[in-house]
Amino acid sequence: MRGLRDGSGERYRALPCAVAPTGAGRFAPPAPHPGWSGVRDGTRPSRTAPQPTRDFGRLDVAPYAGATLTGALLATPEAKGLFRRAIIQSGNGTGAFTPEQAQRVTATAAAALGVEPTAEAFAPIPDERLLAILPALAGLDLRTSTAMDPLVGLSPFSLVLPVQPADALADGPARDVDLLIGTNTEEGHLYLVPQGDLESTTEADVLAVATRVHADPETVLAAHCAARPDETPGELRSAMLGQALFESGTTRMAQAHARIAGGSTYVYSFG
Image 1 (cartoon, rainbow, N blue to C red):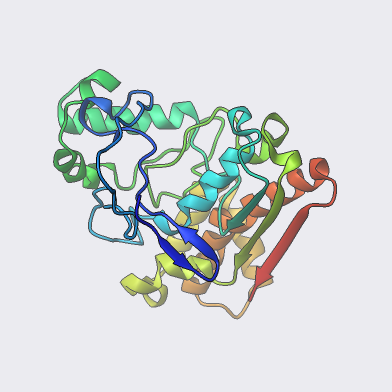
Image 2 (cartoon, rainbow, N blue to C red):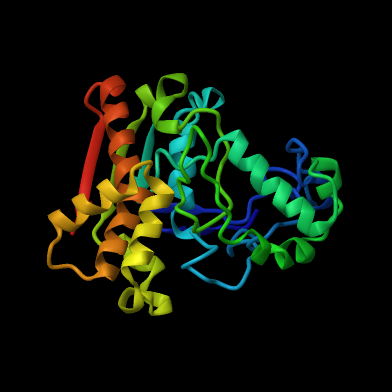
């Protein structure tokens, strides 16, 4: 394997850990990589998975997905002993979909594809066809009788767990892992500014966000307005998005980790 060496050590990129999960292997357990002959180039990143056109306001929350997945690893029993330190930068310790919410997404996708909602039916479908149906998944109402939408309608994709990571840390390696965790100010702007929605947001738009994430949206909206009397509807909408997507789940994760990890929880807040 050909890598890179610099002052901090050696780096090897695009090291395959398993067979690529595409085609018939898309929903199968990981399969060992068969290896290679000769010298493999590890100086450049591998190709990324196919992505839809970036639309940060509706379908894409990828900038923070890695942090949310790191939080899930902290609550995963199989991850014990794999790492000693973790950084969760603007993740969401309560960002997982429930199985019921995932079933709703799967059923909608299956209907758009004209197939049964099973792994076997999805497996042979080309990536390009899956990408083509993404507009059909936009704006799904994922609220259920037991859960609100943790991604506030911005994306129909998340990890799927019966219990949120912040509530299951005792099951994984979290107590033995040093954790640095935090958020930044005005992170809700990411989903409004690129589309020009910060200035065009109406009071109805703000209420719509509150309705997706709170059982009593009017009361929550009134509290936000009272706490931020001089802010525009766009700024209020951004604040509610930031709280729902990052701040609430980060606080819950940090508090849960601090209860079991014996002083190895480090919290930051920029802004």
